[in-house]
Image (cartoon, rainbow, N blue to C red; front, side, top):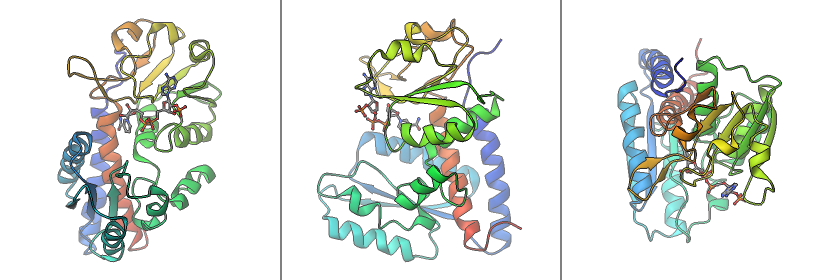
Amino acid sequence: MEKLLKGKPVADRIKANVKEQVKYLIEKGVKPKIKIVRVGEEDSDLAYEKSALKAMVDCGIEYEVLALPRDISQNDFIENLKSANIDPSVHGILVFRPLPKQIDENVIKNIISPEKDIDCFNPVNIGKVMEGDDTGFLPCTPAAVIEIIKYYDINISGKNAVIIGRSLVVGKPLSMMLLRKDATVTICHSKTKDLQNIAKDADLLVAAVGNANMIDSQYIKKGAVVIDVGINVDENGKIVGDVNTDDCMEKSSYITPVPRGVGSVTTSILALHVAKAALLTIGGRK
Ligand code: NAP
């Protein structure tokens, strides 16, 4: 039995759907477009930008990258963001985070227009995740996890889901999204006591920690589904997840690889959200 939950078929199906939406938009005279706002040249931002742009090109979505200097002031950053907010040719805005220290994300999150906020930065959209209100934008990475679960037809209703990591971009919103799918959700973090035993109770274990190969077979219940969100560089310069995939393979029923797992689905969700934002400008799809 194939145990690896590969991201590519999931991403391909999402992108096929986005292409249909883009075709419809263009028929209606709307050219969907993303604006990426990047400050500085962090390697992780550049890598994500490259794969995001590839997904946009695959789907026929236009793009623009606004590369700002690392030492830009908060006021100048805000002016740029406000210009993107009011630019009618821009449908979705992606701001790479974390922003440098001189720019306060707690200020910026309230400035990005909720209608263009395709990766759920604005509290309006975060609130909609809590409410289960589909008119907002889900954060792309947790949405990718949900799409993988859906694509591979994994039933999580009534199952124990354990998420390791409580960040606002992954762990917290994912907990709400799994709860909405009727899982019984536990969130763990760096202060959690007895993490191994809690993880061992999981039917679905999601690792979103940022600690290379931290999760080994000692954390896994036999037959568990393991989703590895982590993207780390190991001591040999190799991209690895938070889960030691080889060690967990035998005990798990399904496991996502890194690379070519969750990360490869995330950018197709981003494209889907640009199309959704563009559709909203013409009242949605008939
Ligand atoms: P983050 O903001 O640094 O959060 C990490 C979380 O892990 C925190 O809640 C932290 O707990 C917890 N943690 C750290 N060490 C722990 C330990 N030893 N035991 C238990 N919990 C621990 O990271 P993030 O932005 O959520 O990202 C997590 C990982 O996902 C990273 O590897 C990142 O590169 C990756 N990522 C992947 C994608 C994708 O598309 N696949 C997208 C985004 C992020 P505290 O809250 O107590 O500090």
